[in-house]
Image 1 (cartoon, rainbow, N blue to C red):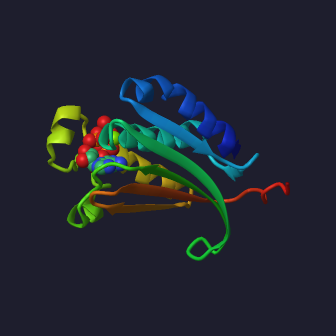
Image 2 (cartoon, rainbow, N blue to C red):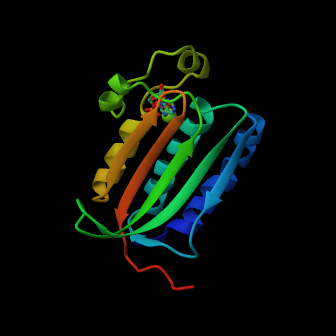
Length: 163
Ligand code: ATP
Ligand code: MG
């Protein structure tokens, strides 16, 4: 089905608004007017919800979580136009040694923060699986002490509307 990522992101940000404010995290959404991809809306909602939940849980508190949506004219690996959703936090980040294993099932970084927050370590494994099923790309970038950016790029179903 055709899924509008703008509506989907707004819905997730709305659903997590209370969790965020409870943790003193400001959620900032920055999107164009419309961004269509082909896929399963429930699964893509799960992807974004997992990423935003992680950013709230493991980011800075108080802090800011940004959710951006950008058009990529020609994504080199997907070889075509794409929409890139990014979830960005300003938290402690993830040490480089852990990055390759984050999408393994049950893998959790053993920090005081993770132990205290609790979780099963399945979130990113599910995210990876769903993104692959949508022929998309998952990119995890982190700078310890500065924050983490997780990007999900999906083949675009429409071009951006001119404004
Ligand atoms: P679940 O999502 O199943 O409730 P989880 O959040 O621990 O549990 P994942 O979402 O797969 O599992 O994340 C794996 C680990 O990656 C986390 O335990 C955490 O240590 C680390 N992590 C994920 N996102 C971030 C982030 N934005 N900043 C810092 N660490 C992160
Ligand atoms: Mg998680």
